[in-house]
Length: 122
Ligand code: SAM
Image (tube, rainbow, N blue to C red):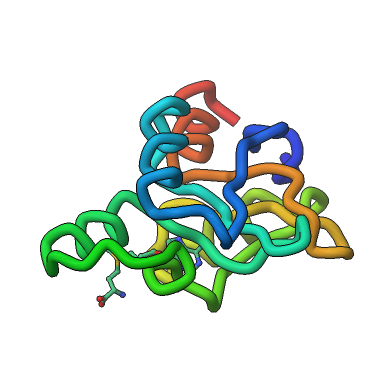
């Protein structure tokens, strides 16, 4: 299967100019731990519940830009799920934004999507 067959499409993103509290609210509403950050609609980073916990524990809730990871590991909708799974394992991450050739976010693939494949018997 391909990434586009298992990913969540139509996912919410947050603009880099919003606050960390805004990001936390979106994550809570969507029941997700990973939120892609965009600047001019293009992928600019990722913020996770871990990043927000770090900011809270260090007692400085700054901007999204200060909390997010800028060097985002991504994949494309037409990549093989196997390739995506390896990439996540190698980078010790549990989700990747799925982007098109213009860095527009088209979805999110998580380790949950991949474990669901196994439970269905691929
Ligand atoms: N590397 C951190 C450290 O040693 O302090 C701890 C890792 S923390 C458990 C997970 C980190 O991975 C978060 O900061 C998050 O933003 C980042 N992350 C999650 N998904 C990512 C992705 N697809 N690409 C790059 N970083 C990602």
